[in-house]
Length: 339
Ligand SMILES: Cc1cc2nc3c(=O)[nH]c(=O)nc-3n(C[C@H](O)[C@H](O)[C@H](O)COP(=O)(O)O)c2cc1C
Image (cartoon, rainbow, N blue to C red; front, side, top):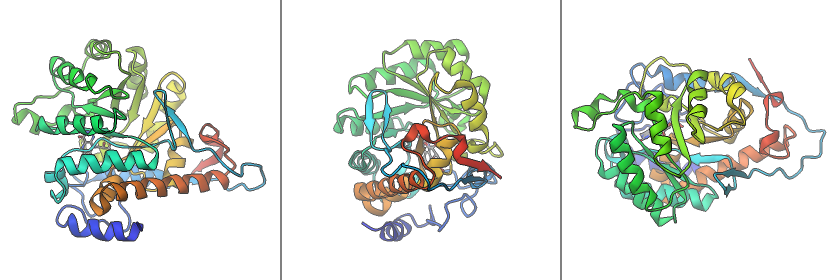
């Protein structure tokens, strides 16, 4: 399947929700939450894209890196690429509903697996959507990761127990979902967590624990201290708070302090394999992809997702050849300059 066809199908199916712009940068869809945009003026979404643009790759071709290895190990699972599908919910209210929640989840789980990687699933005010995600992960034999909203700890632990039944690779909480008033209005309150509450969550399960939505060095260090196995440096694709910094801007400081102590995942504004390379060079161990995977699913179901992810992997490998990186761990800050 061609990317062009995927975009054209998605544009048709997502009418009124996503314009599938030539550059997915948060400008046309500013304020469209629910929808596909960023919160308020869209500044946080736009910053993700703008900060990545300031990073330039250093072209080097006198070396012996002829067949780079793009594989990456996540919690004992070997993936063909350091690229994972991000947790996404709300096919009806965010994307227009041409795909049911189940169709969306299945397309992403299957497409990710076909491409040689895995997907995360999300949680929202409608609790059935978390279950749809869990069922989707079960279908791919546990090769996925559910991410739970920062509800009261007792409610999160109930959802962790449901996850444990399908033996996923890990479990996590998007702690940056703490301000979602819509969840409280629907009787599903969320909120910030104390360090002790985080400790209780990590201790409640044997599964590796992920905290998604870390944007400061201090909170990354807390994640290490409480025993989490991974963080996602993320501002939720700019959807939860207007005028935050872009992820590519804060990532190097976080990586300086916690690299090697915890797996660093990062997301926000990554649109190509070149962008993946940039995030890795800035300190991420692997990345999550949000909107491009949605467009893949809407434009071509599982085949669309597979095509989008495989295309990113191929671009990443090409960038590794042209910068002299034999494997993922060779991608470091000496391979980029920030303008
Ligand atoms: C429509 C939509 C729904 C989302 N739903 C969730 C969710 O349920 N849980 C979650 O942790 N993040 C959710 N996110 C955030 C993504 O997981 C990810 O952090 C973000 O999309 C990355 O930015 P990108 O879209 O620019 O790649 C959602 C994002 C979008 C666009």
